[in-house]
Image 1 (tube, helix red, strand yellow):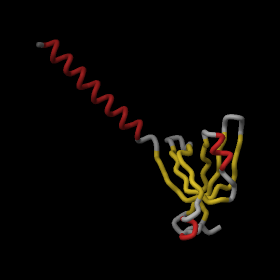
Image 2 (tube, helix red, strand yellow):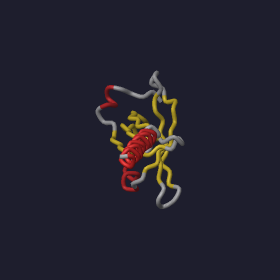
Image 3 (cartoon, helix red, strand yellow):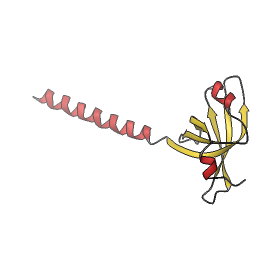
Image 4 (cartoon, helix red, strand yellow):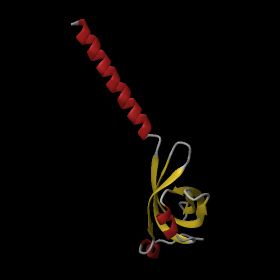
Length: 116
């Protein structure tokens, strides 16, 4: 009986630790969707690609700049500078951003313009 109680306590403890670890890991990332202008495309090596974007503040002015890592060279090749895109990216606790999705702004831009 004593062995069953110890085994049950160990199992419950492991479940609690696993839950806390997963919860902490999920809080380390923030996902954001923005309408932004790609200002610069960067290639630091054959495997490292990134874009610099400027997103609008609450007044519609370009004020907030971010550098976003693009993991796929084919996607990076299709991105044009000084064009507006709808961008989804994740940002980790260190402030590094990785591109998740990007789409050219064709219809949204007609209704909402970012002031240069």
